[in-house]
Figure 1 (cartoon, rainbow, N blue to C red):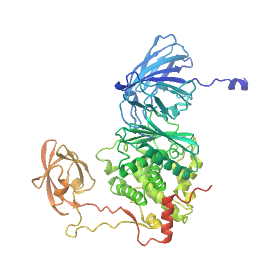
Figure 2 (cartoon, protein in one colour):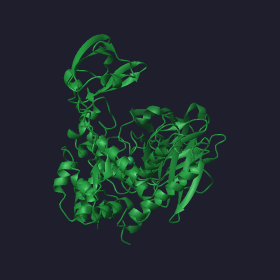
Figure 3 (cartoon, rainbow, N blue to C red):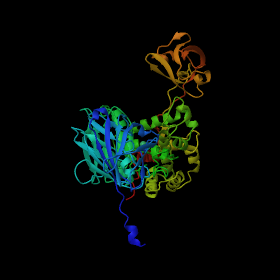
Figure 4 (spheres, rainbow, N blue to C red):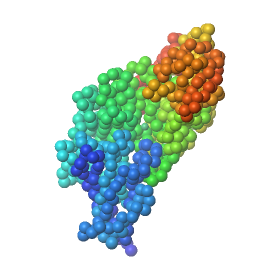
Length: 595
Ligand SMILES: [Zn+2]
């Protein structure tokens, strides 16, 4: 027994995948995997049930079919489906076996697969079956594009030996590296000598890729200014112009989904830039600076954390702020977007029920599984996290007379916790307190752990902002008459989709799925509910005639007053010099990081 023996262990053998698309119009990718067995009598294979960044068990194995295995001599081996996402294969003692399967790829989302005539989008988790022990080993991928497809693009490192050959150092990297194959339009730009690419699938002569790439470069530079450096060698924005939505973050890339017209109107374009900015900010916040629970991932079970209000909420706060700081949207546009977020929070009854921490903890069973009662019982950690970031940023700037900010907290947390371990909520708070130079206990208990109303006064005073005074309600009416329901026009049927907790409708007993036929015996057409309600005053007693599971029901309702909104931010007329200075510094991203 000596040192040389220990050192003589050979590097783990890779799993080698070959992907092909013999009939892409049928939406299948064919996978052949050469799997080393370590000469075990049988091996257990596994497919992930979820994709990191999207917190829902999605049972990807449901799209897998025709799993077969063979030994080196080509003879078939027994494949036993041992769990919903596991396959056990008797190896016959072979050092490596060949596993074949095909995956149906027709779910257009950032965390699933799509294959069609023109292109393929493949994510790692729903594509690659691996050894269930997840022992560290490289995973190699060789792609045969379908006929007519010229390119394969992924952030995976290339392998020698020709095009379309990639090597992930481990399974985590494989899962974190989506692959696009086809003929996308590609726009490259360098920042800090590092190559960035915008990969557009489906421009259709409509989406303006050149302009989008130019503006992305400005966002990249702005984030680089905030964080001080770029944490990767290469970065890819996969932009799937597929009439869908959403984005998913990775360490070296992101997948965005949008529609063809996203560069045509300013509103839509800013929303696209903010989406890209959000996912790109994740290259730091969540992919490298992460909650302790989000790594190493358990790919077969829920991974819960109390910190998504930081990982997602703060990312959403910076998504818009960095677009504004990069000069791509105006101050008024930024304040408008922030106002919308505040208003969304303040008009969601669930804010008084679920804390930011619990919204994060229950993401798997609540945020990702919304229903008609969601607004009454829960709050989005994106929304509340953004508002917490706004309040905390202002608090720190005020406490330090503008010397420090939330930017410093993010940088300090990154210095301390990026890497293998991640942070706990307590550790993140300690960093924030260190930067602020003051205790944040009361703020945390109320804003993060609690469900009481947030106090905006301090933040508004810091920047010299105010909520625009609401227009006076008609004096004789006492506000807009309001039952407290949301309804949709279902092919001419006016159907209730939500009943707000404690609203007049809730108290009176109007139900979700009730079809509204008439109010006070006068027919209400599906597009005329607003108009009909305007005929009344708050306090009026009316009778809704509804159809409930085909039975007519009369429900007396006393109309209330629509809750005042009044969450539009504006610069207060008498803002002081100090307030204006803090406002400018906040929206310009100052003070800049010390060199
Ligand atoms: Zn996100």
